[in-house]
Length: 163
Length: 131
Image (tube, rainbow over all chains, first blue to last red):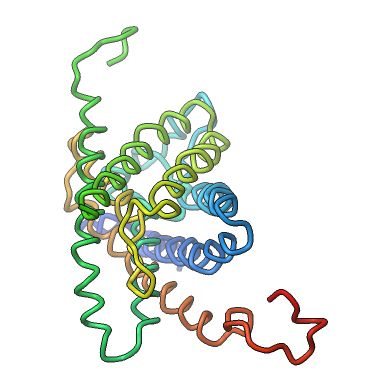
């Protein structure tokens, strides 16, 4: 049964087990962030929020995004299928060829849905529409920052023989 | 103007995450990734959500810097490694589904769990003091 569930689906770029692990990893980190982060801030103020960054996001990074390999040998463990085995719950699709899928997606979506659930009936649509420009600004800002960060691969510098 | 501030906060957060995280992981392994979360996300959270660079008001739907990290990760990999956007779609949809489920579940917890109810007059002042 596991072999059937672990078969690679070409059009999806992942196997059914990867869908399960991705949804579960996204669920876990989002639930913990929504429940714990605001309470840590209430209890400890700004220190609580900065603590939460380490103990929630750091810990769930290990669960969701850790990559194979260890320390200064990050090339990973070669897999017979080609590519490298992934150990994080959030699967990077198409055997790691997909653009980086981050758990921030899940956290943002979860906080948005949680906020929507907390708004009284009849005002949900108006408040959802109100959030769209702010959402678009955050996403556009992230895209700009990410694009500029990605440009460092194209600067043409060949320092220390690094290609 | 607050929308511009939101975009700037998102850009800084996304650039920090994907400038530092892969290098720290490659250098120090799992512990490097953990430490990166502690230093990058903590200062980004302090700027974006504690000081309020990302535009949020009480009583409105929360817009998180996670959206910025998400789009930054996708665009960063597309620019740097020439990966295709359509390859990210299944993973993003899975993340959105998992996150939305957790949001619904957490909203129910906040609604019904006794630990999350607003403080009311304590029936037994000794036990409930300070809640």
